Amino acid sequence: GCLRDHADRVLRALTPALTDKSTASSMKIETLVFIVCLVRGHPGETMRAHVATLMPAVIACVHDPFYKVTAEALRVLQTLVKVIRPLDAVVITEGEEAQVQPPPEDLQRFIPEMYQCTLVRLRATDMDQEVKERAIAACGQLLCHFGDYLESELPVCLPIFLERLRNEITRLTTVKALTKVASSPLRIDLSPIMSDAVPILGSFLRKNQRALKLSTLVLLDTLVQNYSDSISIELLSKVLMEVPPLICEADLHCAQTA
Image (tube, rainbow, N blue to C red; front, side, top):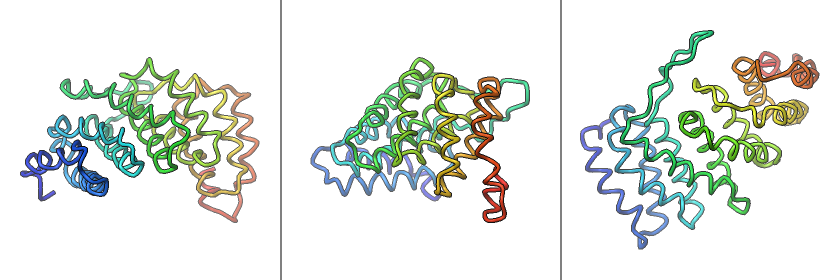
């Protein structure tokens, strides 16, 4: 990105707009949108040095009373999670534990705060749909990258994912978030919800919603590959019963995934 050498000055000029109560919501939203573009347009190692400057302002915006500001702030938070501890280069060898580098020590202090502000939005049932979906996605990203630091919180947040999985409006977003968690090289413990989640996922294969079917098949494939020890034959058989009807020439992409 062309702002690489000027990122520090740019971000220091922008963050006061996010924390000042007199700043218009429209200005906050545009600032947050710009930050996402800035972070995504530059290498992670370049932007990692600026996370400490950004994070307090972003967390403050997650708590903003206006839902559009909250939604954009959650998107920024999700983007920063990937910058703090990238997992793209982690190689998983069969039969061995993945060697995942810890996040920088000076940024580890933000993990509990990022999680707590996201959890508040994840728990809320009276929020705008966009905020619900962003909270689910952000929490999934947090667990994917920092699950080893949030181990004690899994019994708290995973049942909420299960609730969102049962909700017709949030189920697709939840399936995608759980796919991130299940594919994490940290091998997050999903046992608190596995026995309930797998039959629900199996039922999604009967739904007349192509995007949901495809995303569910990807999640089930990931679970079988990474959590085979936690899925009993009885549990798996409930899913396998739903697969044969999907293998047909009417939808070859879906058939291939099935």
